[in-house]
Length: 480
Ligand code: BYC
Ligand code: FE
Ligand code: FE
Image (cartoon, rainbow, N blue to C red):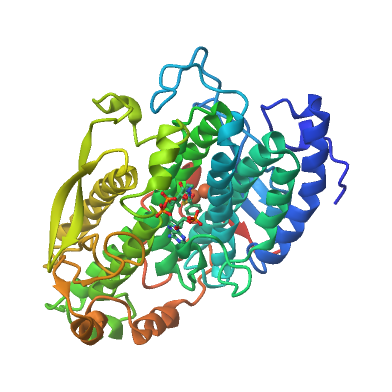
């Protein structure tokens, strides 16, 4: 590929790349390295096929997307920021009421760089985690969706690299290189956050990941979209428009699995939804295993919020760098000098809520908002169970369940939030977390289904096609 690309024609951007020589050169040097990373670590085996993808071509909420067939390495990864709001002022923290910053205040440089690097690191990590899924796609529709998610996560990496290269000089350029060097799950150079080093070996995991872990993305991006550093706020604002589709893929993916399982239970006259073998005999994902997958993914995702009580988060809020979810709809002084917030904590052998200084409990609050959002998703899944008259309900695990970070990192608890001894946990965790046998059963279902309009046996078709396309649309052109 020609590295002397004309960035204004090849890369959609609304940041004046053409006029910014220094930035353009930095991005031009980074671009071929990104492409090397993409071709070696992106979707394995599908780089040469035409995929029906949407590309962001504007930041206008009405018409930002264009659909068309494109080979993934030719995807037009762009640098797109939500429109600047005239006269926007900072909504929270020490600098509340001041005009937003177009440059980085020197004293916050290190803190901002850390936030941007951590955010940036998750994006390529998820692409790496998902790179083998194309081979086992349950349909062309689903295959297209994972690729869409992947190219957009790639674009999210671009978004953070843009900020690093534009505002952080040499340090930023080095960080941009390092973002292409770390690898999900690698022993020596792992990705930064826990969940992004877990494997995503199968499509059930993928749908859970996009439901829950991309939803952490939503909440983190919402918090960063409040930032007093305007370019970060605007970047995250636009990334959020793409995040919606990722969570849609996850939520409807799990919903379609649930629907299919219900359908088979009913067709086969299986009365006991807890009869795992009966469901598995017919090649669908049994409901108890779906619950175990929920338990696992929610717990690792809650860890991504950091400790419930966190000085880092307090500092970032105080510095007006990272706010809360929907800061402008919260009825308080947005500086939190004297406010408190209830946080669940372990006291003796019980879990109790205690009022904690609100500034220290920013992460706790964001994770509460996340849990509320997840509960809406669970409602949708439970509607599907109800609609099929199946006597089984899915639920979110308690926030104390299987945690490695924060208030509950040192204890063990049931998904209902009852504390357990280590011995009880060792004996019983198999009831709540997927076992090796569960995972290999799921893997055994992962046979590709690539005929247009056909779906693997374990998942129902979607209600509608992408961009209004008909059911048998060939989303990925596998035949030359
Ligand atoms: N794994 O005070 P603490 C997305 C570290 S997802 C490993 O508890 P803080 C996406 C922490 O870094 C959104 N380490 O937490 C989704 C710190 O280390 P240092 C990603 C962890 O700082 C799907 C120490 O523990 N974006 O976009 O208040 C597909 C103590 O930290 C973990 C962001 O996260 C962990 N789970 O909050 C694609 C936003 N948790 O610095 C994409 C940017 C904590 O002492 N990041 N640690 O060495 C942040 O805002 C914060 O760094 C965190 C942690 C929310 C991650
Ligand atoms: Fe992302
Ligand atoms: Fe995402």
